[in-house]
Image (cartoon, rainbow, N blue to C red; front, side, top):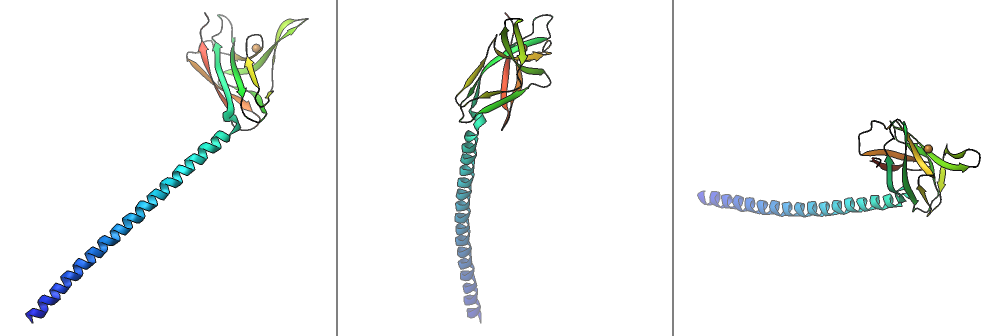
Length: 180
Ligand SMILES: [Cu+2]
C-alpha cells in the first residue's frame, strides 16, 4: 500500500518536473517568437521611416531654397518697410509663387521699375514663375517684399510663407534688422 503510494507520488513528482521543463521550453519558444516579432517590427518601422524620408525629399517644394531673408525696421514716421531674400528653385518643376502671407502683418510682393515719365515706381506682383534651376533675388531697386505695420515689432524674426500654386507653401523666416 505504502509502496504504491510512494511510487505514484514519485511519478506525480516526475510528471510535475516534466511539465515544468515543458513549460520552460514553451516559454523559451515564446520568447524567441516575441524576439523575432520585435525584430520584424523594428525593420517595418525603420523601412517606413526611410520611405517617409525618401518621399519627403521627392517633394518638389523641399527643393526650393530661401537664402538670407531679411527686412529692415521702418524708418521713423514711415508705416512701410521692405524685405529681401534669394529664392532658388532646385526642383525639376516650374514653381509659381502666388503671393506672400505674413499675417497678422500685411505684406505684398512688389517690383520697382524705372519709368521715363514717373521715374522710379513700384507695383504689386500677383505671381511669378521660377523655372527649374532658376533663382530670383529680391534686392533694393528690384523685387522686394513690402510690409506694413512693423513699427512696434519687437521680435528678431518674422515668419511668412510664399503661397504656391501647387503643394506646400514655402516658409520664410525674415531676420528683422535695425537700420544703421
Ligand atoms: Cu514696394
